[in-house]
Structure formats: C-alpha cells, structure tokens
Image (cartoon, rainbow, N blue to C red):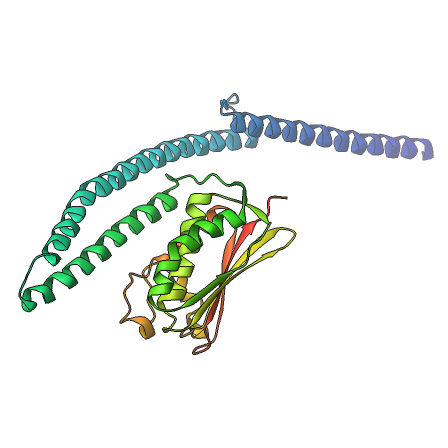
Length: 302
C-alpha cells in the first residue's frame, strides 16, 4: 500500500513538473512571438499570421488594426503638414508685397511737404505698417517652428560670433535711447543654429532696451557649464512681477504694465521655442523696479 501511495505521489510530482515546464515553454513561445510581432511592427512589415480563437491571435489582430490606424494617422498628419506649409507660404507671399508697398508709400509721403494734420496721420500709418510687417513675419516663423516645417540645424559654433552679430543689430537702438550696453568676449562654443539663435537672443536684447529707461544699462554675460552654455541679458529696466514670470512666455501675452509700449507679445514665445527645439531652455529672474535677467541655455555639445 505504501508503495502504491509513493508511486502515486511521484506521478503527481512528475505531472506537476511537466505542467510547469509546459506552461513555461508556452509562455516563452508566446513572448518570442510577441517579440517577433513588435520587431515586424517596427520594421513596418507586420502581417497577421494566426486566425484562430486564441488570445494571442486576438492580440495580433488588435496590433494589426492599431498599426493600420497609426499608418492612416501618420499619412493624415503628413497631408495636414503639407497643407499648413502651403498656407504659411501663401500668407507670407501674399502679405509681403502689400505691406512693403504701404511702407514705401508712407515713407514717400513723409518726404513730401504736407500740412501738419496730414503728417500727423502719416507717421502713425508708417508705425502701424511696420508693426503689421513684424507681426506677420513672427507668426510665419512661429507657425513653421510649431508645425515642424522649419528644421533648425544646430552646429558647434562660437558664441562670440553669435554675440558679434546680435550686438551689431542692437547697438543703434541702445544708442538712440542713450543706454550703455556691454558684452565681454568669450572663447566658449555651443551647439546651436546661428541664424535662429541670433534671432532668439536679439529678442531678449530688444526687450531689455525697450523696457529700460533712457540712461540705463544692459549687460550680456556668458557662462560655461558641463552640459550648457548660458547667455544672460541683464537690464536696469522696469522689472517683471513674480506672478508674471511664467505668463510672459505665452504667445501674445503682454503685461498690463507695458501695454503702452509697442509690441505684439510674441518675441519671448519665439525665443523659448527656438531654444527648446535645440535642446535648451530660457529662464527669467526679475524684481519690479530692479530690472530683469533673461538667460538662454544652449547645449554645450561636448
């Protein structure tokens, strides 16, 4: 009797071990199948091969449906991007000539001997046309960045070359307001697109000059870190309230404290977009009445 019980126990143990081994083998085969399915999906040549009632077949069918839907979505996205690209191109082309003509004629009118009442109309006409030109150009640039149509090409570039370009653009504006502007030379390099990063940095300097009273100062400093190169623009202007530090980077946001100043509220938004697309970011530190410091961080590329 004891032998029979022992034999039965051994059979049960062997059966249990066989079931465990079979289950492990089945699980392994299922995982290997799933792995092959995912590899095929990544390569783009996935096809359904099982049409039974098993759970794996159901998963395979759902994956096939998902990939088909994703492919359709990708194609639709490509079509939409092409439409946006065409629309942006049309807007840029169709508005460029009329705005240029308005500016040309308003400048010609300013050169004529006009009554004071007429001259009082021509000057704001020219200013509004310039504002319109800037707005359209900024919107086109922003739309291209957001839609992925415009691709930046970051390269290891001298930061001093970037500063030389931007300082040459901003000095006339600073001198017109009798604002002293200083920028020390640097030997640092970083990974960035020179043209677009110059535009981003110019926006920071333009704001610094715009919101600094006559006789104030603007300073540009460069610091190098392991992962980033930091370019900081510090002014002695009106400053920014802490609760507005996040808001000022939103598109079209303008602080109530600067509502009388010219601008459309897109410069800082564009600056941040340019920095982020290149793997960088922008920070602000400011206290009302004590100026502001804007820092743009660019990947060092080391």
